[in-house]
Image 1 (cartoon, rainbow, N blue to C red):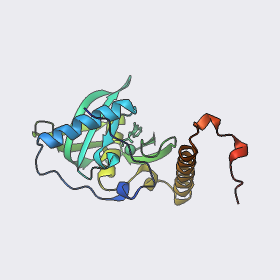
Image 2 (image 1 turned 120 degrees about the vertical axis):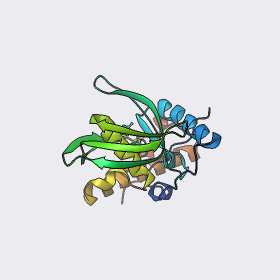
Image 3 (image 1 turned 135 degrees about the horizontal axis):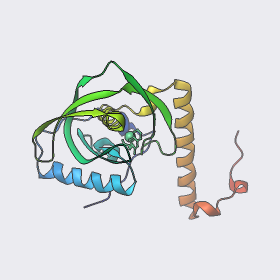
Length: 191
Ligand code: GNR
Ligand code: NI
């Protein structure tokens, strides 16, 4: 078991389309197990392989809430085979878009077809948070983030903030300081 590093936007790897796996072999199972551990540590309720830099169509999910308890689920090559006409709005977050949340509209119910950890094909009817999460994860496999479903104005604001936060972190690392030591007076004034 190995913890993987979760990529954050903007990162070109998060925008790429992932490739199907030929089979659920030992390597894919290892990736699934590492992803599950990484997801639990984050913590999150789902994780897609491209978020850890592996451009493969692999997803893990585990939801443990009052109203929805499911998982751990391991999915290779997941596909939405049915979606409801009815939509639902959910405030989404993403481990690759840390500390930002936005309402996203998606079909309320979906049926997902996938290969499980044993390579067996499964059809799973999803509703509630599971339906939202499954669609969010399959989006990752197609290089789509939840911020791609919101207005360009909000998206660009979030991306700018993420880039600024990353540069700040890099600067602190280069100066060998802990974030707490970095005071406002140390910042270069914004132009
Ligand atoms: O942990 C997560 N929570 C979440 C909440 C609402 C809608 C989607 C999600 S998925 C997210 C983890 C993640 O980034 N998966 O790709
Ligand atoms: Ni995500």
